[in-house]
Image 1 (tube, one colour):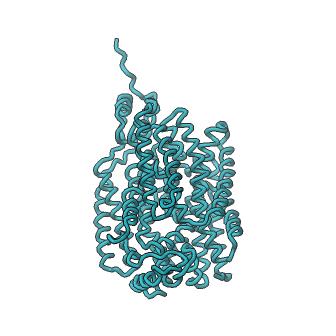
Image 2: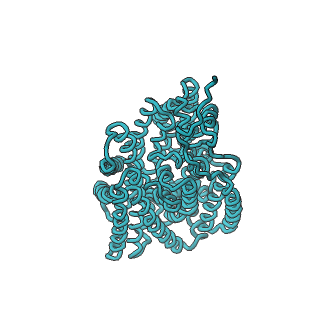
Image 3: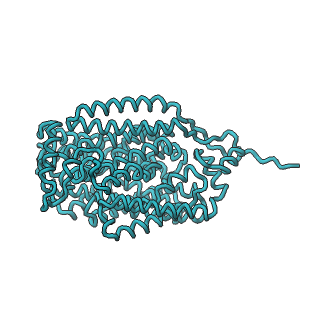
Length: 604
């Protein structure tokens, strides 16, 4: 795809605007770690929520979605669509808890919740694993996605593309911290959405409209499906436009779908990771909940529609591809005119930079707050720790670049990371609601998950993608038995540590003797109220977003009746949500001090 001066001018304007926004926040971000990593806890729901969406819209994501649509049909997207149930749960059951914890990273919660030497070791493990392994894999597939786009557009070899991308991001991501990350995300998300919508619209017009897209894509899949010499798989034409597998699908396909619907989303239900970092950055609990609701609407209902359109159309125009993840960049090269090519390159750069900036800042926060400051050097000045954070950011960039050099498939990296972490998904949820969960519970779940998932990876059948659901379910089952046994066979967390946690966070749930003692000391203290209204809001939110998602996609496939029904369901679910959300517990009670505790009466 050749670019002319107009395209290069658009790319240059975008790059300069990103740099200007980053530089504008350099002084504020350099004040201390709270400003650098959580924006001084002053972000609004709109800024924080849009930043979440921009982060999850990486340059690799359209490539991966196009691959899923080509090779599995719409239903293959339930791998990530199912995440809505988890992030909607995070909005109504965990967002306010995270915000009240007043910590810099989700890993810091380990010591706040458990305390003691075991918790120190667990915090150290989490800091190293998440920053050096999990975050590196994530950065690697983001770098890989942008490298594939650069290779298609500019003809750069892999090493050249990765080197240039590292140089582009290393400076920008280190100077402005979370302030710069969040506000550049706003601009970058707008640019990215304009680019992908422009491509989808041009493709849709060229193919003949929504109904023609559906008809021609199914016909193209039918002509390709079952051919013995296909360079890459193609979805069954009967499954291409379905949101669920039909009853004639294989047992494994149905089991995988059910696993996505009922199990796969547990891992994100507590709102941890980069989402938690945005929740820490919000002004208060209301803004934290609003940020997650805004994120859910855009991330699941709206953002992916243009990618699905292009992915389906690629079956018509690019029927035989050796690498299905190249479908999206090849469609860019095929359809975009002068000017829009530059806009689309800027859009992909925006998607890439917004995600990379977050993961670099997030990964560096673990290395500095949970490793360097906690275990290596505890007496540094604010400026010292900010400088160390900037050095750590560069280190994280280089790790991600190395991972991208070693990685071949974005989608396989997604599956590997999900399977590896599957066994420990329940403990992070229950530690907020059940006082009996301890550091040993979490450690046993983590190590059992690493051992079981990697052991299953060497089994030839389970190693294949179609056996992914079996791998995850077996991992969860074995690990649950392990951590439950460890929980009841070991001592609970020290009572004073639990009371201190309860006093600060005010968690609902099963806190038994901890709640009794805390309320005796501070009679005015009360936990966050979570009940039937919270559950109904969670379910109504899920229904509303899924109805919007299906309605929009049916609209652009020419299924008008189905789209109207989905629209009616969306309106009804939103009505329920708006009616009940005001009845939730939004109280912002100050944490009581130790000096204000009621002293026990000593008998005469």
